[in-house]
Every structure is written in structure tokens, then in C-alpha cells.
Length: 124
Image (cartoon, rainbow, N blue to C red; front, top):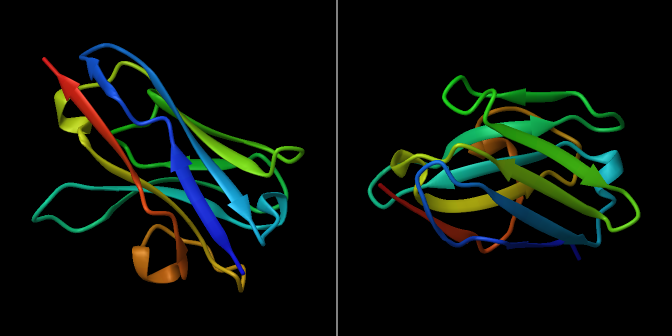
């Protein structure tokens, strides 16, 4: 059974940094595409970035590129989202996701396994 659990969300001031973790069970994060999403109430879930299966190649949307990075620790079976220079518009619930069949992409519909999310609040 695949389980994902996010942690690390917090309330920070604008310009601050946070590191979110996604602990996985039942799936090898090294062999799967792992993605981060965020969602605010009333809006669709937004894909932020992806680390591709097998390597360290990453992709980010333009609004977070250069501020956010994704990494994974195969020994810990975890994926991390490092967020720097946080802005109030980054406030959201953050989720990690993967797909058991190995699919990958920027759309939420691609993924069949999600964590419960962790809240990030950035104040100005």
C-alpha cells in the first residue's frame, strides 16, 4: 500500500524559507516521478514541480523556478521541497504525489497517490 506523508509546513514571514518533506511508504521514491502541488481554497490544485524517476532532473513552473528546488533521499525514501524567498502568494496547502504506474506530468489527474498535505502560510 502506497502512503505519502508531508511535513514541514509552517507560518513564516515573506522572504523566509521552508523545507517540506514527503515521506513515502510502499513505493520507492527513486524509481518514481515525484511531484509537488499546492492548493488554496476555491482554486484548482496547481502543479509546482517534479523530480523525474531514476535521476535528479527536475521541472518547475515559472512562478517558483529559481526559488524552489526538489531533491530526494533514497536512503530515507523521502522527497523534499526547499522553498526560498517565500511570498504571501505562496500560502497554500502543499501536497506531494506519485503514480504507481510511473506516469509523470504537471497535471493532478496523472497521479493516483497523494499525501494529506501540509499548510504553508506566508505573511507580509
